[in-house]
Amino acid sequence: MTDSTRRHTFLKKQAQTNETPYLIEVERAEGIYIWDKSGKRYMDMIAGVAVNNIGHRHPSVITAIKAQVDKHLHVMVYGEFIQDSQLALAENLASILPPNLACSYIVNSGTEANEGALKLAKRYTGRSEIISCKGSYHGSTHGSMSVSGNESKKAPFRPLLPLVKFITFNDPVSLNLITEKTAAVIIEPIQGDAGVRIPQNDFLKALRAKCDQVGCLLIFDEVQTGFGRTGTFFAFEQFGIVPDILTLGKALGGGMPIGAFISSHEIMRSLTHDPILGHITTFGGHPVCCAAANAAIHVLKTEKWISEAEHKGALLENMLVESDEVVEIRRAGLMFAIEMISFDRVKQIVDHCLDNGLIGFWFLSSPNSFRLSPPISITEREIQEAGQIIIEAIKSTKQ
Ligand code: PMP
Image (cartoon, rainbow, N blue to C red):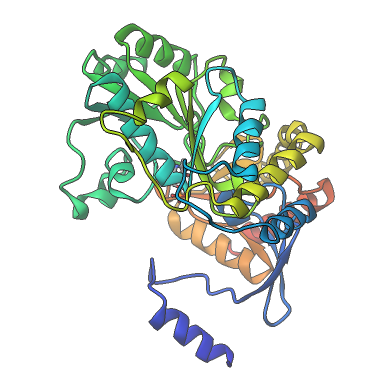
């Protein structure tokens, strides 16, 4: 197939999500790099949007996948048969989480993890109201979209879930919306697609206290912040509180599709009766994805990358902050929002970076900022190189 036929097929026969896709023709990927079919190398400073935290094709992940493929693929819908790689994943997750988060329901994606978490909270509490946060993103299926905070993205798909209300991130007064009618509050402990918003002034502690006061469950969506991205395995570890339900996806699978919602055994039990099969999924906990996830967790436990994420993030921040055109940098570990004066400037810079072999990306709900979320395996030398490409893009596109 020629380049133009491939593009034509992609644009016509593969459904599109927007009018101007990147159109990088991927040949292969390794570490922090992706190569296209012409041999051009890109520094992947997005990591599939916070997926390839340990880099592309980590050898341990590849070995684990191959070993599992030689044993078995799908054998039964989730939750009926005992499968080694699923069992190991449940144990591995429990080993990196507090004791009240020791029971994992393994699913296929971040949005499905959130769907499961919302249903679990409604079933366990017997309440139906959900509180979420303005600017949040929790996924693209109906339930997750209902609790996502970007109205312009939701309006054409109404009616969505009823009884969803929105608090304002970092506004303690808005916590008064949480009442005895509330089943759960779902929140990203660090908001991702809102443009990396960091909780201030013990906001999350006040939120935890309010949930305890009214008897509702607290769901932390760490689909994007999980697995070392912010400098700890999970972002919530930095804020001195623990959720009742944790949702995961993205980096969990080391590059394979998988998600999980995690709670206590007592809370999770409520999905087994009245009605039975309260949440079911055919492919949830696919053995190959679980094998990859086990390898990825092992890599993160043995390498120093998580503890180095803050230092490496600061290195890049210190380079970029030198540019007087940068309005603000919001950052947690290696999760960045670089705010410029306008969306036009963001687009010029991201396009220029792409021409020069560096992949950056947008945010759904923060148009004046561009996003960086490189593999946390990135080296200091690679950070220097990336920083120089970005600074050069800012300078040379300045009007
Ligand atoms: N929650 C958060 C915080 C996310 O960032 C995302 C994806 N960007 C999702 C949920 C949805 O995950 P998925 O795309 O795997 O459904």
